Image (cartoon, rainbow, N blue to C red; front, side):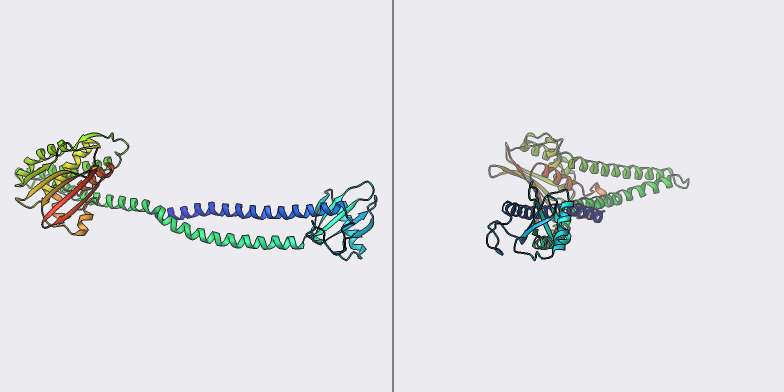
Length: 402
């Protein structure tokens, strides 16, 4: 799909470029041709005013730029006099043919292509006059211009083709990344749903068998309920992730007291952490306000605390801190004692369905929480990152203050 998209992008881009090149070079050729024709016409009109009084034979007048000659006719269209000094006018048959061609044309200004001559006919009651000018140099100029335009057009086409190919890579890259992320998301979600579905189907098949006691059948039912709950949690997290990605347009940002929100979240999670044998310490500065969506910010703190509880060492500690950073920002940090993370893992843990410890997949962790947290932080124009040092994993969030 990405390859077809790039081909379409290049094809559309090159179609536009080709049309523009043809129009621009065509206009250059047209206006050059028209300009040469107008200059020739002005010269011939100047000659027609004094067809046989141009000065010294063989020398052009001030407005004369091309070789020319003039023919004076009688009212019956017969040659009376020829002059100009730039052509051999002794061939009467040629002159008669020129006169016949000019008189046969309804136009007073035109071109005799087979003779490479342009004519200008001046109608007078007594002696009509026809001025001829050579257009060989004009045609040569236009021919050279045409070749130059074709060369420039060809080089320009190849240059823009090369640029379009490079530009297509850059333009399609976000789509390609989104497509890959979608494929990874579908593959990971399918993998996460496959195991509980297998367990559910196996237990359901075993329930249909009469060989097992009532106690074992209760165990099978409990397995079905457990796996169903796990699937429901996964689906809810995936829906939450989608809602978070699409919530930017629907969010109404208000003034939120982040200090109270962090204190409340810590107080809510303290019993949960206590049951796991973990100690919770808080150091939250007062009256820190941010502009944002209160429900999403509460969810952000809950995700960080839940993640700290799941990945802490036994009998470890969890710290929650919130303080100002300068006048315009605040820093929220959730620190826990747990297995150290590598530099690669510190980046990958924000990817969807990534878990640093795959064995934790059966405790309700699907690797979506930190992805949701990252989306929330981005919507609030903030930054989130992870650090790991000396057995302590620290998740930091910087948000702009009110």
